[in-house]
Length: 89
Length: 412
Image (cartoon, rainbow over all chains, first blue to last red; front, side, top):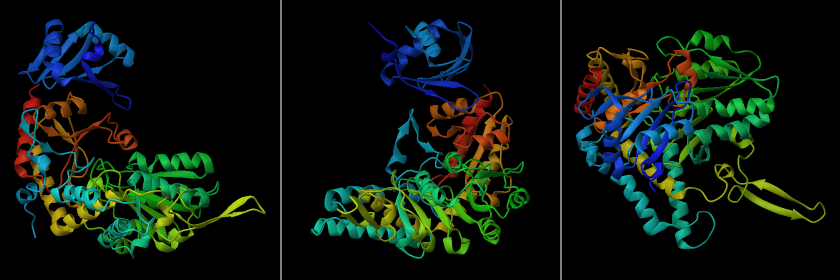
């Protein structure tokens, strides 16, 4: 059974008013994760394969070719994990 | 004499690596610096040849380790022109140094009637210990204002003093804007008002000549890892006469001369060790001290005036080139002579974290967020900033690459 933890190496929560979650995907899974996300989310804009602005389930986020992503507007880590589960599982 | 960053780079193995398939460009020196092979070798050499506990045993290894550790104190004392190693306490870093002053001096000398002056540009490590202690001791904290360009508002600062002011805690250099505070002027104002002065030197000691006697500071805190040394080692300088009067910070071995049990009272009477050991309880970070000594030797070899000059030139060049980026807003003073090699900025429409992640894709490491200085960001109504900070191994070509990538990001 595949779990979210199989794909996510670390979640960083930024401090201050501007709550951002930075998700770092596991290095050996980043290609698979990026392909899954690009397959599901709507691409708003991009620079080559370096940065993508995407929307999925009314959540806007940015995905980087390095296997990192930045999410805004999510209340807490639980909500983020639920969202990630829908996005990449 | 101008330093040669290309020659210096040969001493830093990490600068040869690639990140995300690009040559590493390390512009996060305000957070920590890379280590030259001389420091790496000194650490390896210590554990390979000299490792033993210090000041504990009569055997040869312990004697050699003790001598190295004491030499490290002497070297650091000489580097900042302290009176001797008695005035140099090794700690984990700037944060611990400031906490040491808070709890060894502040806890016993600050009461409800007293006032402490801080500034809005402080790193959290020079705010939180004082706010915490204030909740315990009831003294008042007054915050000095910051001008639009990030410089200290000296008029507001001076107006904060009263007969109750006991201590001023202020950064020598802001870790966000790179502004250099006029420390001689601040020391005079503090001392004219019978207050002591604690200086956060985390961003100054690694980047410019700092002479504690010339500046007339009472305490100076700085970290080893920001000046090419290892993490987990830093320094608190204090004037000997003040340190002598202070209570120890931590209790344990090394910091005592005698712990004598009295059967009549059922208690132990304790006398403290000499300076600086009175403040270094337990087995210290001996290897960290050795690494720090080697880092200081390295910087002395380069010359601190040359370090400063190199950073000023890089900052001037970067500020000039950043003007080409139409969506980039730079914060802090435009006059490079009043600042160190730190540039905070934002890119219109993007968060600082987006900027940092995009640059990371090209192997360029920068900091994003509050940089542990939230009150200063509030002062400028900023949610966060991106920050580049330079050091001796950075080059103009690296800045060119950084600008090229920023211009690409502006198209997003």
